[in-house]
Length: 139
Image (tube, rainbow, N blue to C red; front, side, top):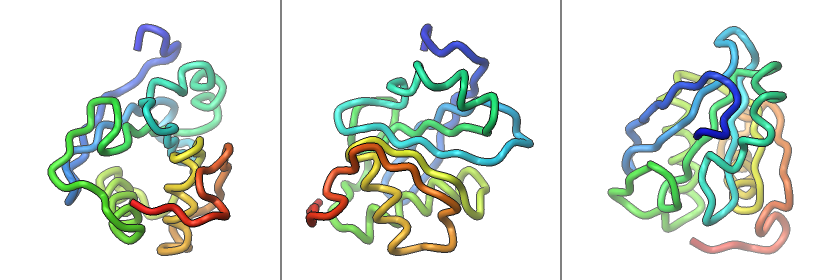
């Protein structure tokens, strides 16, 4: 986090799959943007982008459950529905009804899958090389 060039808050959100760590930056009055990192990374992967993104958005960089980072797992995500429920829990924990999402690789698949299950909660998506965006992925 020494490379995170803007002020931030560490949040811990309780979900039905464990505690999810989130790094929040930017004005609380700005539009909400949720970032999901690629597999085997953590929320810190967004450090080169955070200054620009947080100047326009309230950014929530999420440590995906079951991957690197500070999130803890009590129940492993095994299905698409469970993955969508985890994202839903993260939104609820952040007290958000909907958000804009950016995701890289597996982090691109998460909001894409979430949009299938809860389309009204996704304002926009930016997917960077989403894993299994066309071909089926299994958990």
